[in-house]
Length: 421
Ligand code: DOR
Ligand code: ZN
Ligand code: ZN
Image (cartoon, rainbow, N blue to C red; front, side, top):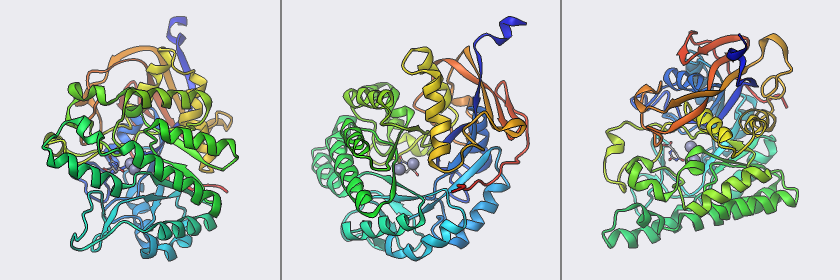
């Protein structure tokens, strides 16, 4: 019937390049079985798994084990990020490239636990068993090392030493509200880190990808670099596009994420960055923690929230609100990531025949995001109760339907993908 086809579109399968599934650990927060069900439910056909797991993907042995582990649970196809740990693993980088890392991630400004290689944001001098954040010179060596592989170097761009110093002053004043957190000047921390990253990328020829840009200052810098022809890409996430500090009173401490959600003026600048092509990718930064962990004081709770299931619905809703075109959404969520990470045209394109990845969307379908209905283990989202018009209604991976009308209808058969360049 004609009415059934109204508002329905077939898109190339959507790709979420930024997912923390906590698998092989800490799986009490999330695991790959659940995160890829959530992805499929949200119209995503490929996810890239982040490397800050326990153990992290910092060497070939861990990387190969991770690929096998994820393969057994994957409802959608997946790439795997490798972790940069400076002098601790620079010599592992070429082999991680050979093993098929989709790219390398460096958490700028994070300290490292010596025993577990886990990353610690809140570094204070004298902390036991912790390697302090790297010097600028050592960070530059990471850029040089990854540049030689030709792979993308993705950075978490926040100089935490600056934030720490300023935040301690605010802490002493006893304030614990969200704007006190922003007085740690995370805008400035993002700006100076992106500035340095762009200079390092220019000098080393690294293919820089700036993860989760959250500030106007950051976007300005990326735009200038692009105008000069640097091979840089930039990403933002729905929480930066649809939320600001003004939402804290409504959303509460679960809003906490790194980088923090900033001011309304940043949000507006990010939308401008989408319109003018500075932002090339939108990802979820799916980073689940349990409801109990997220329930405490803003200062002490972990940063991150669920996102892969709500990424496409929120962006489709924005299409219906006239904030971007469906064509632009397809570029940001499928074509651009596929091209940037060497998956095109097998992914990110409609032109590959019967074993294509496809996301079918119904632009007229209305719903409300309900935390309790999420497929991830943790249900923590800042978008509980958010009204949506426009929804993925079928997710097809290599010709097989994985999700139909919100139901997961396939057992795990997702494949590990590597860049074809
Ligand atoms: O909020 C965040 N959560 N930011 C990060 O960079 C890491 C992530 C996590 O793994 O929890
Ligand atoms: Zn990050
Ligand atoms: Zn992340």
